[in-house]
Image (tube, rainbow, N blue to C red):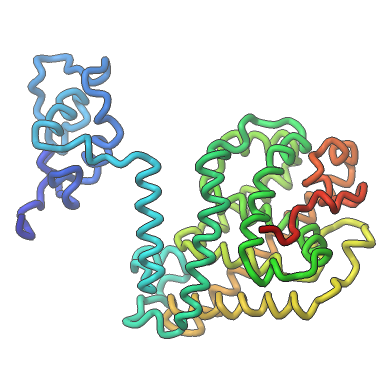
Length: 374
């Protein structure tokens, strides 16, 4: 089929956006067929007249039965509809290929990195990324996919499973997800090579930051059960902060790398971001130089990566400022939750050992599985 021969939708004669499920269609008919292809013959898809309704872009909503029948009549194929898993696998492959080519589509780049007027896609976007940089970025992508995303698609498809009414039940359900996140960090050489006590200390010091960045990264749309849980277990102030967090993070969600690298940068910090009076958390790490050096590696890598997506360094500075504002907001949420939790020590005592060890209660460091394992 030559260019220009599929400018009209074969179903309703609206403007076609391209070939969808085998034939030229508009966006509404594409979406209609994807949602309803398996419903032919059901009560809502049987014509109430003689089965010969006129389907045009003005009247396509009048009869779902005739519209679906026409979709099949013009040649739309149900076999070409991807399942959710197949669609996600395709999107991952597209993201990986973009990363390998150093390309992000212009429309996504504009949404991803604000303000849009400062951006353009470079002719040679990889000029700031060495081959080693690209390997490290690909490794980060795969490490997160093989741990957090793999777990989300199998064990944690619905989180939380119910709307909780107590903090300890929410965090107990979160505990195995946090263990998976630790598995992601253990695939980062600079983290895995730190002293065991330093790893434990920085995990405790940045527990809230990690949760507040990783949760919207894994679930870009806040699940209903989680929204209800927020309102059940936290006050209005904290709930509003969590909802604002999700709004802020949306500007970074169109890229498969930025937040994954940011998580590493946040963890690789020897500072204490908790609002908890605990001597151990306030102690200086044993090898602060290694932690700082490791963090610096990923800060510079993120700078070069964003520079490869930007028109100039001014844009990178603007974007980094937005990332910093997001980190400050996340830290503020963590401190508010810490202050709130200080009034509910009985909740801490009911937590699973992993998450309980994030608070200064009993010595539960042995429950932190961050040691080097095969």
